[in-house]
Amino acid sequence: MSNTSNFSTANKAANNKATQRERDKLIVMLGDNSLQDSMLIGNIRQHTKVRCQMATLKDWQSWILPTESAPGRPLPKDKILLVDVSPVDCSQLDEILLELGQQKSVKGTIQLAMMNVLPESWAEERVRWSPVNGLFYKGGPHRQLTNGLKSLLRNEYWIPRHLTQRHWENLRPAFPSTAELLKRLTPRELQTLMAMKSGGSNSEIADRMNVSPHTIKTYLYNIYPKLLVRNRTEATIWARRHL
Image (cartoon, rainbow, N blue to C red; front, side, top):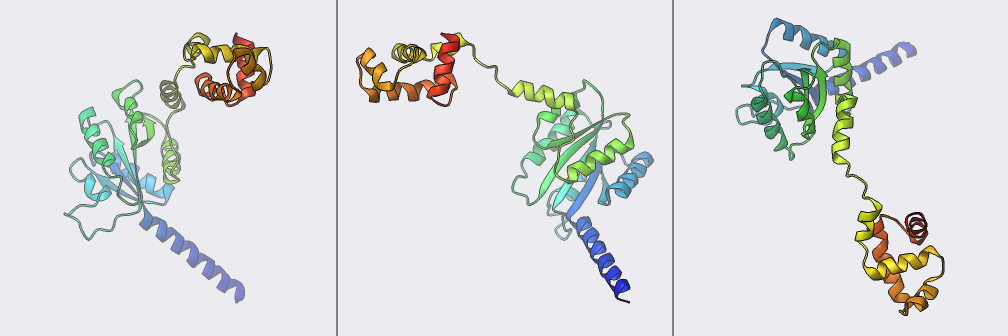
């Protein structure tokens, strides 16, 4: 009897958790309401265990954003807008992205994922926009789509590796050359760096340069950020390597 009761309690808790998940999360698929889309949304619902809804360009906002036209409709906390890019053009998608970008004050998260994307198409370039967290290529297996949506529901990204790498490389600045770094130094800072190369304390370098140790310390504090080093030791190593 006790085991049965414990099982019922655990089962009830699991059902309550699943119900709460249904209330807190929503996947809205923006497509053309075809039979194929309806079958796909059913498959997504089955594998993600999250409420799914079909939408069009005319009504997607009512499912994702709070609107005056549907004041009584409770909005889930976390929402994914899955856009089939086949029936939309780049300007329509850009309007959606701009609309989502203005919703930072809305509680919860709003993510956008694109499906049926063609390689080297305009849709690929939209991964640089902040609302886009997922991208699925045309012809990919359904399992990949559902696995990707599960990742998005965990607030993770699902962007192809080569696009992530391309975006990261565009963001990373080129490391400056030795000549470019040396141009940042004043003549006295360069003189200090040359003196550090052969060793010596701040007082010894100050005597050689006929300045105070405090002035040498000031030069060093200016040198560190200019050479992208953190301390005296790294500055000395840099000088011995490059001067």
